[in-house]
Amino acid sequence: MLVLLFAKFFAMSVMAARSFTQLRKVAGLPYFEGMKSQPAVPPASPEEIAARAAAINPVPTAVVGFGGLALTVWLMMFKPF
Image (tube, rainbow, N blue to C red; front, top):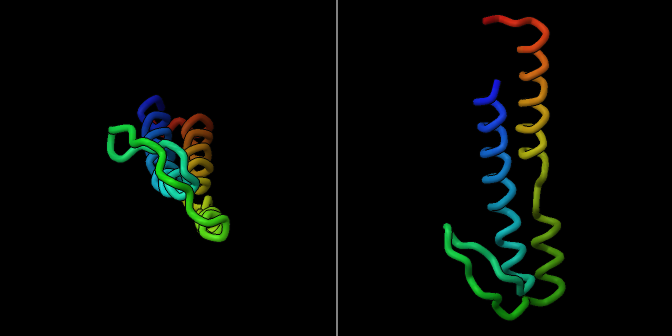
């Protein structure tokens, strides 16, 4: 159960960070590249920032979250082990 929680946390963090790192970069905010903190760069145009924000798809991250929750509930209810 604990392994499932950590796997879900790691997967959701990686999936969301990939999208939001690019958004932080074009918005002119400090961001991480790998494990290194990068300084802010000049912000892009508001249209480009809006386009990047609109391109973020939260559905895969939500599927991992709700799928992990459903699996946790199933394991708790049916106790297959």
